[in-house]
Image: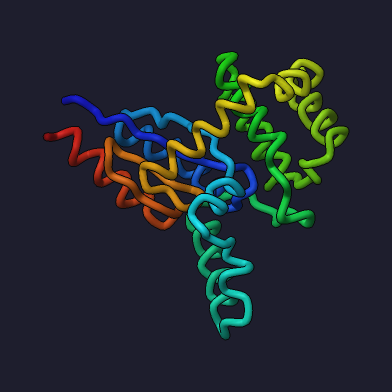
Length: 204
């Protein structure tokens, strides 16, 4: 059985990306695949696709936001996820997403992702403030001085832009987005479909 390449295109600023991150290990355990995490900049995706965040897109629509909150609460309850809405939302994620690119280049993406998602959505902080980022990374055992230096490197900045543009070219318009081979799925609510597609492609 040949398992497909499975990608998770994410931005730390998306609460649904965090919720997906917490569900992904179960899918990996059941299917035997390992998700490849691809850092993208959600603000850049919105600009390139003329999309808007839900809080803007659905503002003023009766019952829509209330349903969205209820649906999110159901998802959190179903999967037993620790989650706190970040009081600083929306957070400008340029620095921490560049950090994800740098961590990926340095072979340290997994611990970095775990740390930043924790400080965004479990013990939420203002993760667009350099000193807050420094303290949070240090608390999580990451070399904050090195990371804050790396995010200023041009190759890191360029790679985040390239990731974002390439993701949009493949059809992405937001986060979280998943690719199973060439098949794209958007949103945490499609994770069951992602799992089914992994199995289907593994059989073919």
